[in-house]
Image 1 (cartoon, protein in one colour):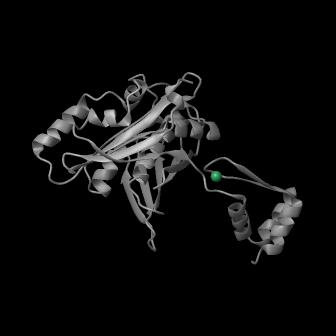
Image 2 (spheres, rainbow, N blue to C red):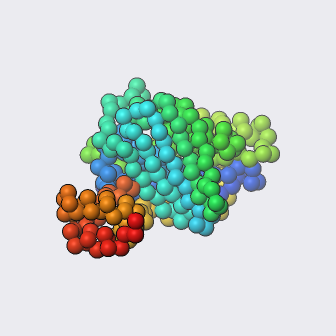
Image 3 (cartoon, rainbow, N blue to C red):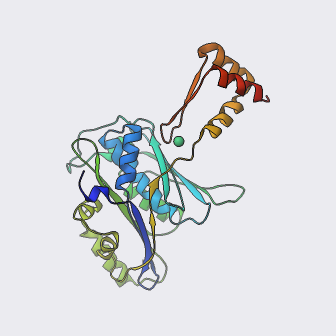
Length: 297
Ligand code: ZN
């Protein structure tokens, strides 16, 4: 692994054009490589999951306190569903239904993320903002390459014109060389001239992974797009799954007495694997019997 690959993942956010532009940038190389290792994702699946995780990390930074969000990408491609959770503390976890998807490169010689995700389907956004009901938004998939799809989501569902860049560079051995992204959000008050300037900068911007591989810092990356970036905040980004044996026990208890009795009768043991981190939780006969005692229904 290169030296760059061992740097900590982080995110910066700030403003530009006197607060009329909101900017986010993230480096997620370690996070995406951990997702790859935990789930055994093949390169195209790694790129799709990693792009979604990078978007989720930045959207998590738009939240406050205990708020959290879940992104579900349900396309008609071979990957099945992509699910990623993120929160305001920079903690991210996620999985894909079919991690062993790898397709031939697309016409640009890049990982064929759209082919894996599918070019039709929906992106669902679920935000737990501490209210009775979570906020739910969804927009159709417009390309399957994901950056365009999140751009469309921000424009249609959150009425915020945005530019989204996402990238995952995978090595020949399948490991992640670089991963990251940016979100530029245009707020009311920008002049046409300012918007054109930003669009022109985006038009000639190299890919996110090209910039990261050159050793470019995130604030430098943002300065390629908007000049006067004011960085307000920097935070670490990391993989974190909040599953625990206690939570798995609660899930087993919720199955009810007859289901637990069935588990004991069939296998005399049970293994529950967390979707998000692939951690197995084993229960032997005695442990299942103890759970059966505690089950109330
Ligand atoms: Zn877990």
